[in-house]
Length: 182
Image 1 (cartoon, rainbow, N blue to C red):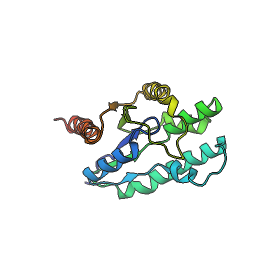
Image 2: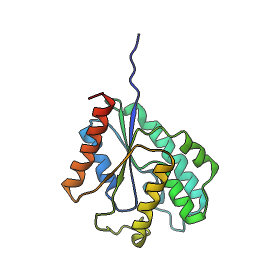
Image 3: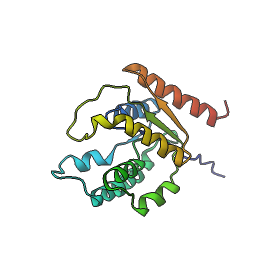
Image 4: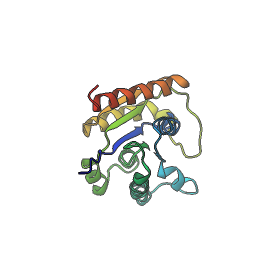
């Protein structure tokens, strides 16, 4: 009889310019597994116009497909995601005043085991794909509310430099120890 362990999914989420990609990549290396990159960064890299609702939906489906495609590469029954599609809901609500049903339906079925919510204590780093430096505190509140609304298991990760990575790693270790009954 085969004993197949359930894949554990860790999503690194939060407002813009909070170190999500860096932390997700570091954690994936430390856990010897794959990191699912943020699909929207590549999608928007050559988008020379304002986002549309259709763009948001394209990014939603693209993120889902990218994640699914990388699941077979996950090692140690862990997948680390540099963001996830809850980001689409945050942006749709902000930019368009509503979120399409496909996104809401997917959120009800979301199967992420741990969310690491990156705090806004890092200095803003300008990037052509970032839009709202003055709204970071607003979006931090939005992320708290959204994670609570889906009853997510989440931890806020703060700290500058290596301390941020250490705090993220400690949160993951606590989660894994709890999962393993330690």
